[in-house]
Image (cartoon, rainbow, N blue to C red; front, top):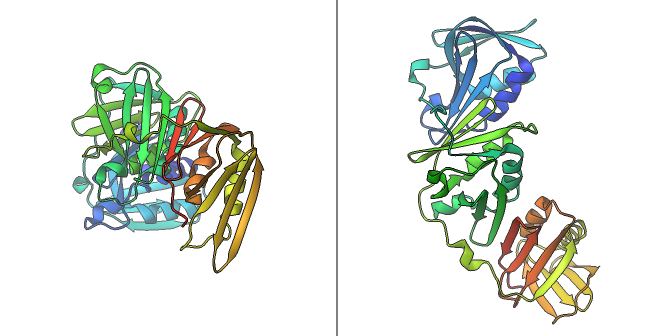
Length: 368
């Protein structure tokens, strides 16, 4: 293999590919990327055996077709630190030479024939989504997925079709985010009939794809895998097995106490009222009275904080405690200048709504 790469394009490709490569694995070849140069194009592959990425690079000059499998971290470091606009790659057997104007690296790799196969996107998609809309939905839900939970189903994000909308739902058992995303076209019968759980890692990968206004993501289900094709990237992923919680059951529908708050002002108030909380007393209290909302936080060893906000409210007084970080997480991703806060009793979850498409449920905490 002998190929000249545009360094900037290669840097962008490796930024996505290296996020798939596992840092620890009993299979050293998985810590590598597979570079395959054909007659007219170069594809670079990365996989951890659960998620795979195929990246097509067009800004290349191919002098000789061939393959190379090289350590991803070493390759990324060389490309990142290089000052050349063009880097020349020449591979033979299990080594790859990388040359710039004043530099020469020889990187030892693995046998290309041993690299795992990564599925390609073939045939018609089951549905299509505008990349920009999908990424907006991912950003508004991803933070609510569980981290390393033994309940594997909540380590991913639920995909559910309702008409020409995709519902994305994420929960970690203490909070829940649901976002509606408009589809580019109606899904086929296979897609419309299923509920699937896509791993959080795969959703984060989709969010990293460089977005252009008119990019569309084609989605295809194949057995227990889901495939995404967008521009020059194909992502393949195993689906999460298990049953997602019946999330509709925990969304309150009977609340009468409703507030409309400024997103920016509420985010600032939550951050400030949490400044003097501690790990032991990690909570803030919302005290709602007539035309006044008070955010307060305290810890016996550090002190207390209070932030007042004028509101339009005439209902019964309410006091309720929340984890401030959970409030900050959702307020940071709300795109509207205002949001609705709905509350019941102090032992029932809070409900946050932004526009018609974003809904967030947050379990309260007992502040004693």
